[in-house]
Image (cartoon, rainbow, N blue to C red; front, top):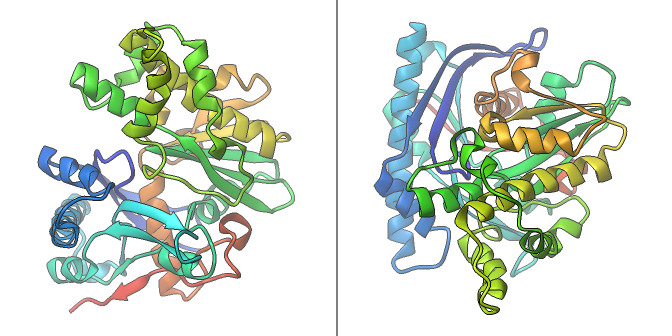
Length: 367
């Protein structure tokens, strides 16, 4: 899995069975090069020679995925022949369901054919397109896995993934499942940190913790219409990006009001916490536990703000339930690959808005 944070790829080697919880045999993380990260960011917006550049970026991602697979096999002393399939999400650079022609599209860069050639293993990829073709948002896709992994307590539970974008799964006590993208996760915080500290992210939220929330800026950002939409809904860097943040800041600049960079960071952290709190309050009011995963789970200041706004909810990471926060999404796409191999639907129409259950993904078979 390589998500909207654009920090690299997480890979897991996981044993899946219908009787037991997933068993992770190995986990690796490989960072993207600075050049690839820069190119992927550029491809999120229109630019010159896009088709050529996107194809080459897809090849580069396939090579990084293949290297991660090699690391996993070596760590677990497993041969390629023992692996049923690779679930390869690819790197989202555009997510536009329902736009333009009424169908829209979602685009994840990668090269499933090349990955199959490099690894000698079946590759399942392009998970989102079929749901979009069926009238859905193509996202989030992880709620079905969250239900399978965490929905066994027969009590209402929220599962919150804070990657570049934050998304919430609501696992109701009656067995129903819903989910949607809440809004920004780490994407704006990371951008601001890179811009002002030259660091990839705000480790533990230490920088944000020294700032003060700018109430007027927070209010301006909270007026983004996306937050008022009802599910099904999904978002990404197409909306929450540096240009969006610049527009929010511009109204203060024209008045001659300078906001300290550290206070902007504190405000962005508060915004992420707020949009996740609002999601829980509006759509999971009966939930009394919230399991957090993704890179944001390691941001102590963010988790403190999140928990502070949900006093009746026990907030903890998914590690308390046996799966480290930085492995959940990678296991989810291994699980989705398994649904394809068993010819089971991978989407939840109640989550994405698709016309019905669909087999998600496309197979590039081993040689």
